[in-house]
Image (cartoon, rainbow, N blue to C red; front, side):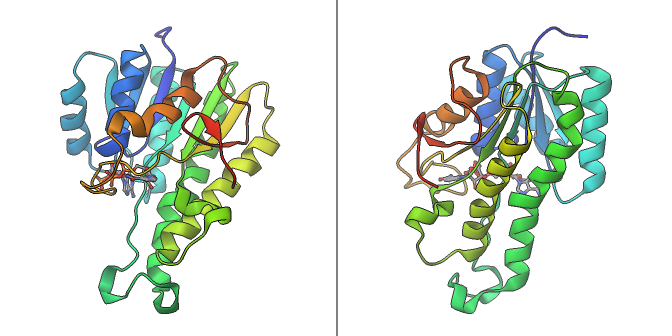
Length: 236
Ligand SMILES: NC(=O)c1ccc[n+]([C@@H]2O[C@H](COP(=O)([O-])OP(=O)(O)OC[C@H]3O[C@@H](n4cnc5c(N)ncnc54)[C@H](OP(=O)(O)O)[C@@H]3O)[C@@H](O)[C@H]2O)c1
């Protein structure tokens, strides 16, 4: 077994997930790059190179994938130090509906909640036995300012609800898990140039992942149960 710390990143095949895998590998983590499509994951891992990044098939809509990833980590590494719940979708407005809540498509909201909120719960629960084997486990949930109740606006109800709920998930785990052994935090990356954020976004990938990497790795970073942007706590 390797002595490196082990990290799993969901949605690791593109956008901020891929950049997060790259950054963790550079910090000498053994990185499991979760990808809904394994070929896309293999291709993405090849852009990083070296032997620190291993693609794993992880479709968050498929509970069997979640169990299989937990098995792979258990047998290959025996522990998990860091889980980054990065994968996310913003699909409000699909199917001809506007993205206003007054025109909401409940199916779209439900699909969004499954990927953005419920899958992280399933994944955390499947991986907790492996995180119990390390002294300083970190769970970082990639949330959004669009899930901030203190700054709630109209539109994108599925996405907004999913991130409000992911923030609540963060607080619930932080309350249930011993903060001396597990740090569970949420982060808003800001508006970042990815497929989701678009080309006009004001932040680079490096800027977008900075706080998540800090929460996942820095010795002094944070307590548990916070919501962060730019390495500082922000209001829920
Ligand atoms: N970009 C921004 O401005 C911004 C702002 C605030 C918060 N965020 C959050 O930051 C995170 C990363 O966003 P991003 O901008 O990097 O997004 P992105 O470029 O659209 O990438 C999304 C990633 O999630 C994966 N994914 C989607 N559905 C999945 C599923 N069912 N199972 C497994 N993986 C799935 C995608 O995989 P496929 O390639 O297979 O689709 C892709 O790897 C998200 O949680 C997002 O909500 C982004």
